[in-house]
Length: 447
Ligand SMILES: [Zn+2]
Image (tube, rainbow, N blue to C red; front, side, top):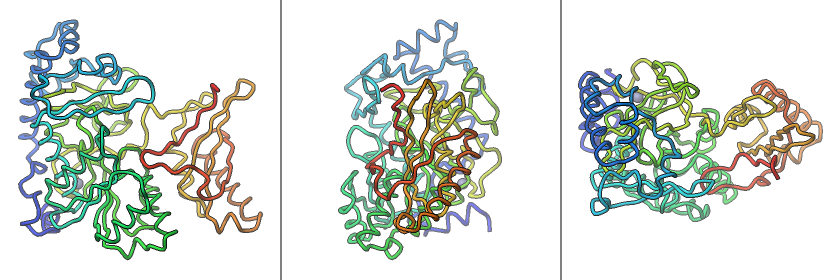
């Protein structure tokens, strides 16, 4: 059977908004639409955003210089620091009377960044979420529990309006209160969860303690995002809960969750290219790289009114995958984002990413996917300790078994990281649980 047809037939046509979605637009039509929208958004930013206008002028560029999609490479980048420097409203391209929503993200340092939406922007946001959720096999009749935080963070309200627009029943649980989350999942017959993957891990553990077997519930899908996670983590989640776990990608600067999402083939995340134009660049030189090469993801909003982002440097490291997905969508895909250039730790001159630690430890029986990296400095030398929780059975077992596990982990980490790190096995639940994004790294090198 034709893959597109197969996907569509997975849900009954009347319940499946995918039929009328632009995910299957022929590539030439998609490119023509992208160019038209790119020209319009550059024009809009030049007219209304002082910083962008000044940078265009410096380069001797006007919107008329954009003749093809490849011309995007001439345009200046936008960085996160630009949002901070123009705090709060300096990058807005619409007057406040047209802006109907503000969101903000709490930066780890200093001022938050603020993002804005017109009603048309919110409609686009909901429409891409509908495409995400329907790509995950969800539709009218599903009961979707949103356990991302509601508020200034884009996760909660983004997923909420998307799930409503899909026609599903939304349970706006927001973050936290694990026992109540589990009660709602069970009593309401929730079929899908939207939250961070680490929070869902926490719910898996807590459900087991409460004697609730997630595999016996109607729950069948999880749409997890807002932090990098690995395929090993997916395998663990699916095994422990019996659900199908999907990776969703997004960032507030671009729109929030819904920039891209996996389909049921789980071969990378489709980017909703009619609204978000992806490029991969060499993070050092800024030069564009061809599809298939790994580098930093750069995104341009093609239809955003209130706050157009031109060539926004996401700091996320990925690859645009070549070849067509078996689902038949014409949208290009990015590989799952396992790391961000911001996450990179430099330990004794070697680059280390928390996701490398995660993938190494999840392959070893007896460990739990809860870990923390503690960095210290002694005699001028960086030391990295990986604290890993082990299952209660293992912890109570004979010392010999713990030693064996310790050696296995040490070998696996040495091999993956290429440097010697300390491994500490700790009791289950001794690492603090997160209600949102996990805190993987404790850096004590300066204190
Ligand atoms: Zn696909």
